[in-house]
Length: 441
Image 1 (cartoon, rainbow, N blue to C red):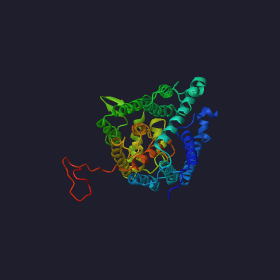
Image 2 (image 1 turned 180 degrees about the horizontal axis):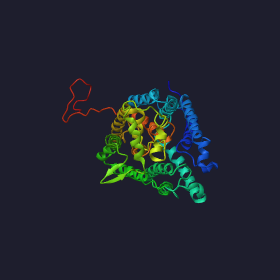
Image 3 (image 1 turned 120 degrees about the vertical axis):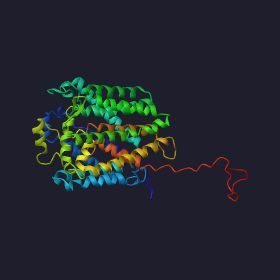
Image 4 (image 1 turned 180 degrees about the vertical axis):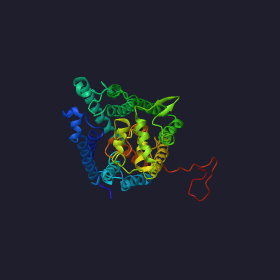
């Protein structure tokens, strides 16, 4: 039964989405609340942000069931591999050393995934990217103003490794850098479709914050992703190759894992030089050292850093610890094992195949696709897969970048494949008796 469109409720859902982006993109700068970093941790500032996002996602789920809100009928088309992966993630705390640590995160992961799935049928990709672009723009503008007028808040101080670098409105300079890279990608794509002072200023804002945070890697990824999309315009063969970047990223992730499992090294050895990627490789080698004891199932969601002795053991070895893998691919294999990694690879292959088909039919009215939104979708997914080589966004239950990927995954995989058209062979004449005029073909 079709219901009349409920535009008011849909606008409310978009407003809630903007609030979710603010609450769950990155941890806020503690200076905005007048607290120190340690005081913010003690008072659970990050936890409050997460709880706010969870409540808002629950509200989105509720709104999505109101008649007339959904733009398209809800479907599970193309969701087999993602559903299997989601089920494996949710049940993984069962074999964890501390199920009480992974159980709540699994429930939140299920809730946020359900919300992203429902939202995919309530709003369009264009509305999602418009909401993301303007909200990120406001956060980056706030970051720039903090750096200029309140440098004690906007800049990193008393940090021997990152002294003077920007963090703006966020808790870390990496957070500002990655969000600036995403914003820069969206701004460049918008600018290439519509040259305006607004889009040019937006690109300048993203670039300024990116340079201030000194996130060179994220900036390179954004520019390369945009360049690939620019080159693919009007070139079907190049366009069909761009989605394959996802498989290249997965290949690098698997190679990264294989190297440290086989060699046992704590860093990359290249022509006699030790390359530890700002000590990220220490974390990778340490996590994989424990993973080989339970390679198929893994430690369970959130079951590694919460296991007894894991954190203290890392501190004894290196004198510091971060409960962060700094590699999404390593996070997958460590927490949900080789089985989970296999399911993830199945999702990645399905996503690549579908993206190649959609790129071939972008201008087809049968699929109702917009070129700009498809480029933004592909560019964002490419950035997501690439950034996970050195940062962890896979298996994040409340971070918006991870949930944006789930939203786009549903959007892409739920699109129907275009129906094949039968083209008559040259010189073909239909047999008589079909009701066609004589001499027609």
